[in-house]
Image 1 (tube, one colour):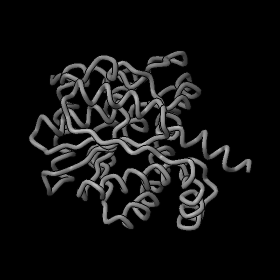
Image 2 (tube, one colour):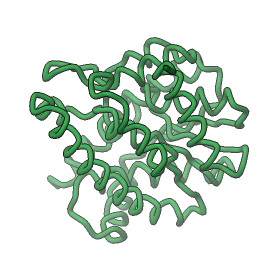
Image 3 (cartoon, one colour):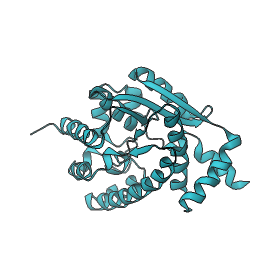
Length: 253
């Protein structure tokens, strides 16, 4: 029987190749295991990879991504969000996507800046690792349901996937204004179907499992993702970039 880590590697390669028609790509990059794994595999199979990171000055993602990008040896550009113009971007996004969903707004704001950065460097296709947290129990919410067994985990997974797919359509509205396309190879129907066959214990152990996504971390280490990234606990984009913190300040004013 094939090694599940090897199978995972092959399926991710297949998902990437089936998504892309151009060699020059960017990856929305935080330095965490998901985006680092995607970047490493894309580079290994011959894509011209540029890493893009956004965040406020001194944010975790800006600082950590520089370290991991250097270790990966890949081109890396950062965009520092200016507090002076942030409020106008927040208002603009709210008008365009017309939802009070905080996570949707935060992600659309983040990808506004990622798309802007991509355009500045003449890149039209951005890959994201969206799908990994949903399919491999990356979110803390999985800790609350894992004791209910596979059925409970899968029910939450379906809910998370549905929300993510809808949210990325809203993100696409924002990125299209820059002439940029956001692509999610790991949210393809084929990859989702495969990921659901991976045993739950390869994803999450129990209600105290603060690491999670175990098979993803094993694969990351096996392909040469730095251990600082591969073993790092999750920090969502809106928190690592300080977008959430600054959006909350803006809402109070």
